[in-house]
Picture 1 (spheres, helix red, strand yellow):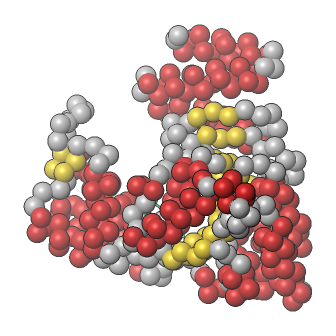
Picture 2 (picture 1 turned 90 degrees about the vertical axis):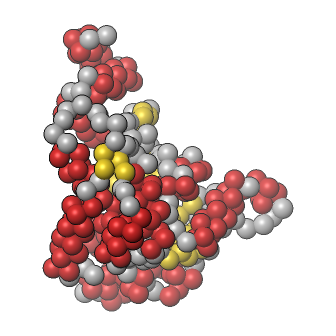
Picture 3 (picture 1 turned 180 degrees about the vertical axis):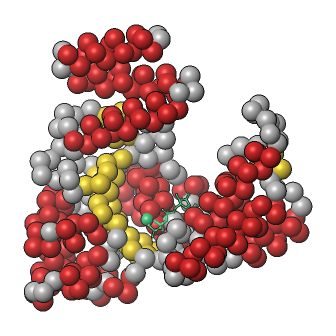
Length: 345
Ligand SMILES: Nc1ncnc2c1ncn2[C@@H]1O[C@H](COP(=O)(O)OP(=O)(O)OP(=O)(O)O)[C@@H](O)[C@H]1O
Ligand SMILES: [Mg+2]
């Protein structure tokens, strides 16, 4: 089919108000645009489609290029509270972490694979997990890994937005979100979980904070064991002890060790034809990168990969690109300066 044919289909299904066929045609046109290197068009159409799916109440789901599927919300009143509904292709092998973290995640995942067996034997299922630690060290990624491994839909909730926008409605909104999570095979991902602690700062009414924490505690208790709740925070100190204790599993994510930085480099290079030569040079760079998060290290490495590619001054796909270590080192230094200027680390 040509782009012209897709436009005709889209016009027809749009006028006939056939949402399903319209979305299918649009998705096909996006794929077509992507394949024919009309990236801008593909991105813009994808964004229109994603937005429409978020706001429409008709069902249906479709795969995007990232392998993540977007689904229409199916519960009235919660659409604006839920940031995203996604499925993921991430696996445990995508996450670099200490062996004991991998083991904890493995056990948590297994609980849900063996759910029926545990239920038959009347054994409790661990279903509430807390991720904490510095920014860019894998809390969100680990949530996507759990969703990917268990093939469940992740309901992403930004607690920060919910708590600060309508303080008085926080408890009611939380109840709505939990109800939706319990209504299907969902994983509820409560990002910025520390926002609950901030109710204290926002509210003039000192009882408000207690009410919100109590609501969450009750919602946790009534949630079916098959519904998973993941909470993430980089300020665990803001959280009430009673709240922390409710989690079946708590995992601390830390800045990468030397070995983990090496693994991150390998994982990132796997994406293409890029190489980093000379062992000793790498060791020095790892020392330079020490103290940065996985995210920052990966970001600077990808930027160095691109700049090394541009230096080849070709539009043909090269068989091999040697990453310029001096470029990467400079980017690492710049990242460190930017972070210390922003006062984050
Ligand atoms: N442990 C890790 N292993 C592999 N990649 C990682 C890891 N941590 C972070 N990354 C990379 O950095 C990106 C951002 O990480 P992520 O969103 O998981 O951080 P976070 O801990 O949730 O940070 P924040 O507290 O800011 O939300 C990931 O998508 C991934 O590309
Ligand atoms: Mg995160």
